[in-house]
Length: 148
Image (tube, rainbow, N blue to C red; front, side, top):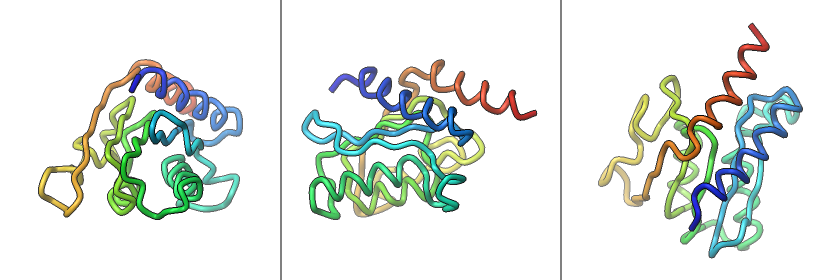
C-alpha cells in the first residue's frame, strides 16, 4: 500500500473539517486497496463527542463489509488516534493504523499512552507514524492559531 497516497486522501477529509470549523482531522479506511470508509471530525456538526473521523470511517467500513470485524483493513488518520479511537480499532480488529502527526496530549499509540503495545490485548496491530507529518501538523496549527 502507498501510505502517502492514502494519507493525502485523509488530508482531503481534514480540509473538509477545517472548512466546517471542526478540528481538522481526517481518516480513510482501506481494505484490499479500496477506500471503504472516509470521514472527518464532525463533533460540533453532529453534537456528538464520539464523532471522531476514525470512528465515522470505521462505521462506514463495517457497513461496507457488512461485518463488525474489519480484518485486513488499515486506518489512515492525520493525527495519532486517541484512546477511544484506538479502542474502536482494536475491537474492529483492524490490521494497522497509519497516522501523520503525533499527539502528545491525547495520543494512544505511544505519545501519551501506548494501547498498541504488543501483548496488551488479544489483538495486535501494526503502527506506522509520521507519514506526511508536516502537512498533517500544519493544518492543525493553522486551525488553532486562527482561534487564539
